[in-house]
Length: 249
Image 1 (cartoon, one colour):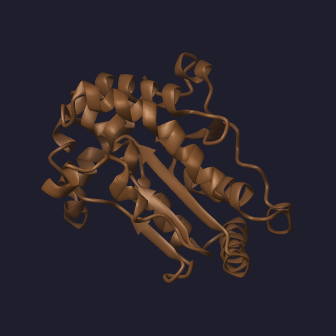
Image 2 (tube, helix red, strand yellow):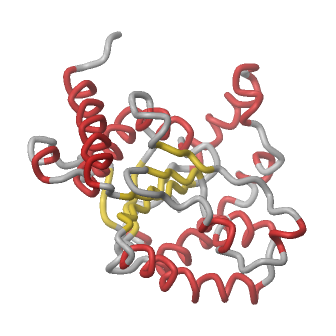
Image 3 (cartoon, helix red, strand yellow):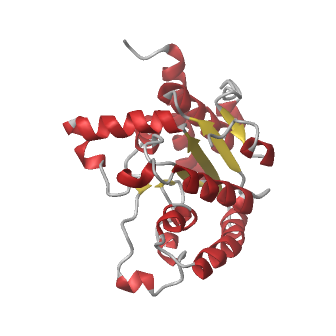
């Protein structure tokens, strides 16, 4: 099935957004987080498929080396922040410390406490320096994660996506939920709010995220004809979402 008129409209909006960023020197950072198999890679592909390679960077940092482990935790991320006209998408980000590291014991309680204390001020400095910062949490339910994990195991084309953490994703589902809730509650701020996406349906999630980015980053002339995201798919984080079923437990 071919691309719909709406898909074309959204892709064209992203192209126009990036052209405008190149003209104005606008800088933007997208932080894309979510559970294992939540669809981060696919969402990034949907965003970047027609964008300029020169002005778009996807950052997915590996495990820190010994030297990086001795640095201030946020230090290695600073080197990847955008220059004029650039869009940087973090496929996982500094929030590894609030999720994977918490659940799997890769950092200490003291390190996690310091992170939660530091990150709102770090993000405030980015925004005050003129960087547009968009933080997106992709949420899926446990059954959907199980289906996607099974596809990874059985589809040879998905072999490169398989990781050691896949084996514990289901067993530690509740621990990840607790870590997610703490992260969202402690790092949601007026200047760097979280936006949540119900991502069981990948095409709907992709469209919702792109619409959101256009309204958050593009100027009004580009975004004014773009419909707002479906509120049943994408919504601003609020504490009630942790209890009312909008975020999977």
